[in-house]
Image (tube, rainbow, N blue to C red; front, side, top):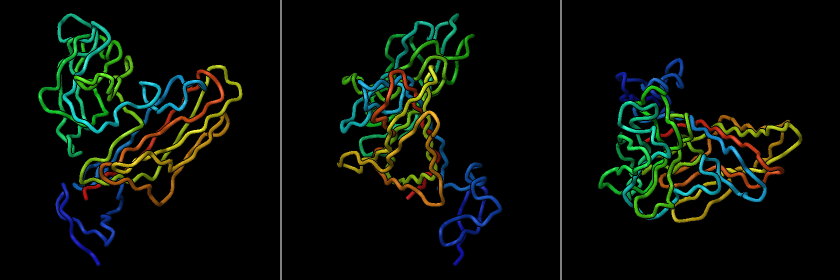
Length: 272
């Protein structure tokens, strides 16, 4: 059974699994030729895990990720450096875009671009948000990058930190996310790596965890990596995460201080 689908490029034939009948399905998705499918590559590193501080999630804030909350508040953003500022002359970041914003119903909201005011918090205005986890520098002064860490958090409950952009990175991508309302995420590739500056034997035990709406986090992948064996998962099937599910990668145990653990995943997000 064949059907037609509206795409950004016009009308295309698709099969009963809603796959486009073209020479390269992945290329069509990457070129946004299919309006109901988006592709993502998500990655990040926890740069300093110690046995005494595990479990730690993989993000730049260390320890447990602090954005999985049930209440909504307005948000604010600030830098740790006076060089990240709207005033010229300066060397740091000037404007930053916040994306993957979810409202109280978990619906995905439009991106917001704000102008930084160094260490003074800048409001994202009156709209309250439940989630957010990506920042990208849109403009900067002569240094062409953020001079220091940039933090996004709730305005009143300031311990609810949603993202920390590392120094000079111009973007923060965190190995944790929430599936928006009316969306499904299909992941077919995960990889996890570790390193230490001393280059002697070490190991880490990690998990991929998800939390269905109003439940607790379940481990769906149990992963052990060493200095000689990293973790890679890829096949023709998918790990399926439904709307309102929280997903994260956690470092449960490490053998040595100063362990660096990185994770990366590729996925499709489809509109239900």
